[in-house]
Length: 239
Ligand code: SAM
Image (cartoon, protein in one colour):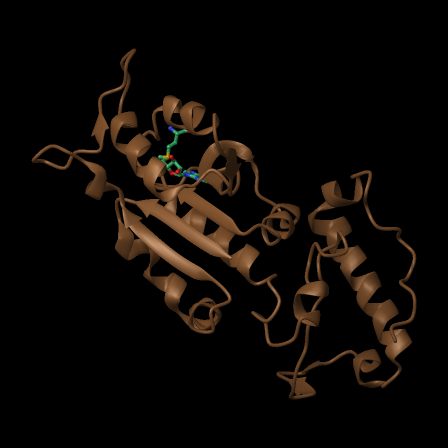
């Protein structure tokens, strides 16, 4: 998978080269290129923004800088991702769908965002997805792009040590994951539930499913209202 990220703060994206994503770059599973939008400016001040038509606070990013940049870094077969609080919500299903694509280009906005014509123009030749990380407003698109990239790349074959990890995560079966425990058995008077030490895999799977269901009911009942919500019965015995 190829990832291109356009930003005015390339240094914000340095963490993409750390830990599992760094390893995925090293072993060639993904390639990541970060582009400084200012390289496409043509004035001495390298300015990327201007005041908004119609008035209002803040500045808007200019189409005559973004346009030539995307012409260069976003080929017709890529998908252009625009992080925006006004986008459709990014979910695990988005990450799963993107993990099957070959090339994603992220356009990270700052200030009041990017002139709408940039996306209207890009949409004439590429698929454009305006996607929100959640119902809050960040300062810029970089953190949102990083979160979306991490959620997507960890689903690629060979990125996680054990592929079962993401198959059993929250959302993969429509539910939140239940609690996890490790050694020691008792810590500060709190003990690991007996069932997890029983060695009975069917019983453990049922318990985990029930815990996930309970947690989902408490914290995210909206997930259970969806038409594709999982049945509340226990899962089939694992192999
Ligand atoms: N004026 C915009 C609005 O109200 O919709 C907010 C602009 S925000 C200050 C600047 C940039 O941060 C946006 O262009 C976008 O790239 C990014 N951003 C902010 N919140 C975001 C969110 N919840 N999801 C994704 N990107 C976000």
